[in-house]
Image 1 (cartoon, rainbow, N blue to C red):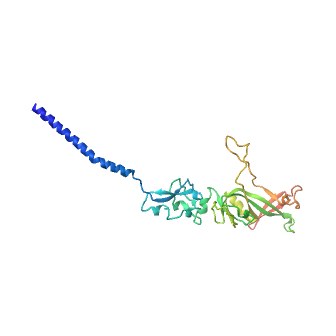
Image 2 (cartoon, rainbow, N blue to C red):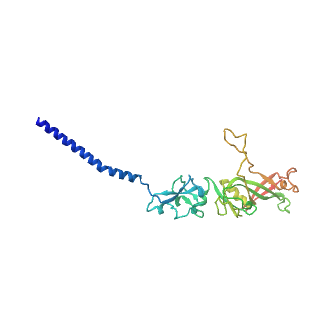
Image 3 (cartoon, one colour):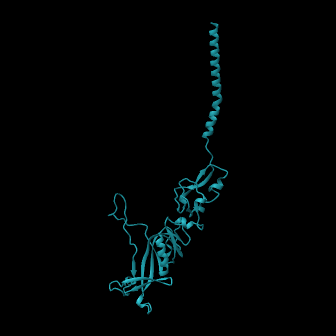
Length: 298
């Protein structure tokens, strides 16, 4: 009987000690848990903002103000060396640059991702894949009084003289003039050295740079030796072709492509060639000593 009483008393002591230990341990842990939770809920102070992309910017994008924004960023000792920090560099420094390597929305923008006007590779970054850039001289008339801007679409018209082979040594009475559209719907990438398509203040430029195909570049190269080149501005709006529009997809009517006009079509006083139009029957391109000319043959 005494042995059972001792065992029961011993068990009670162990149980009481265990309860006391657990309560003491729980009491010591509770303040620590509250402190940890308080630390986790405390907001991270982000006083520094860096420049990020406000939208997806594929390579070749001409950067405008709406493409960029300042975004809060955790502080770091090397932040100024890695990213573009607000109040350290103005946003205006990056307007008009071109994206060298694509940037997604919210991704930090760095100098390595952009190329500025005047830097090597700037114009190459503006061009679409597979395209070439060619420049042609323009003036008040051929450049449409300065109302052609980067991003516009134009046709290129060549105006030149043609001489009949049989009268080339004579008094020149066989000379004819004609104009022809040699390129259609090409993009203007720069006027003089400006590629900014947001500046809409008209100014007379001396050089227009166009984005063309490799074949188009060859056409422009020889056309500059044949005669005078003129830009013809195309409308932004296009005429919808209701007959071809199906299933909610809009189709547009084909615009006039490459064509030509003879001097007799512009002036009723000029005659020659066929009785109806005055257009000679045969035109031959002749290259002599590196100089290209077009001559007429009856």
